[in-house]
Image (cartoon, rainbow, N blue to C red; front, side, top):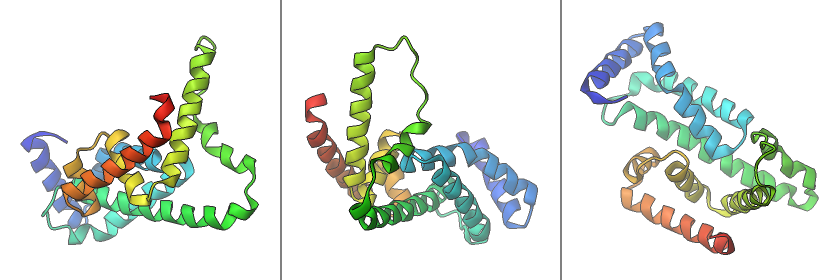
Amino acid sequence: MHGSADRSNETALIRAAQGGDAEAFEQLVRSYDQSVLRMALNLLHSPEDARDIYQEAFLRVYKKLPQFRFDCAFSTWLYRIVANLCLDQIRKRKVRKEEAAAVTTTSGEMDRFQFLPEQRADVDPQRQLMSSEVSERINAVLDKLTPRERLVFEMRHYQGMRLRAIGESLGVTEEAAKNCLFRATQKMRAALGDFL
């Protein structure tokens, strides 16, 4: 939402929703549902997990909306909820992955690729091979980042969010978000050196 008219309209919607107006809450959800789903999908690379996070996020928004005090933008507050849920999910996955490391099968690793759009027949096969190699390498590096580094990297590069907004969403300073992004980018560069 942009501009002061949109902002005052959003404020009115939030106040109405806080007062129990279901239609106003519905409108708020519609304003943000695509960006929340996109953010969760970009961070988790799993449509199923993204849908779960999406539902959980709006459930939390519904429960916590009466406590929203307008001390930050509604979008920042919402993205903080989504970011925290994604962070928990990434941490859970890391634990599961470590537990399963002893019995890992190659078939388990393929599920994220089945959701990628099919390549057209006229795409240069050499380039296609390169891009799938690069994306495999990127995914491998993302898995090795700390949950917070991964979140900051993906919010910046896949969501196009500004560092200040990322910091606000994660409840840290812009400087801390910047340092986190720097560490993640260094790790990514080190792993992709021969592709760059």
